[in-house]
Picture 1 (cartoon, rainbow, N blue to C red):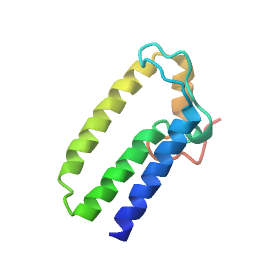
Picture 2: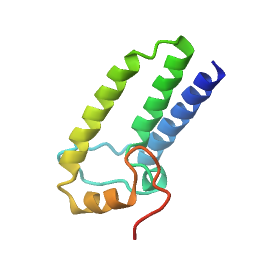
Picture 3: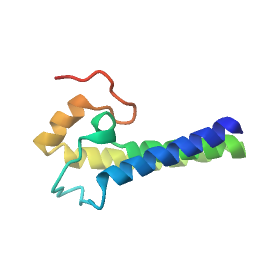
Length: 111
């Protein structure tokens, strides 16, 4: 259960850092007025989702009910796929994709 608790806390921390870094900035995916590519977003394009994933994984470890993870992952993956397809219409985002990982930090960066 300790691993589950650690994942929950780490997930909450990552999500809070992502939300704090973005600030009050919210955007419509189909018409972004700004694409955040610095801070935690330098290496991960979807840190808020990563934080959520970790929380759900931690909860499933603690509850010993991993079956619902499939639904959680399916939901987030479909949402990310939709966001990515819309954002790929913007040159700045296409360049950003080359430098960052979707969910796993890209520590090696293409110039």
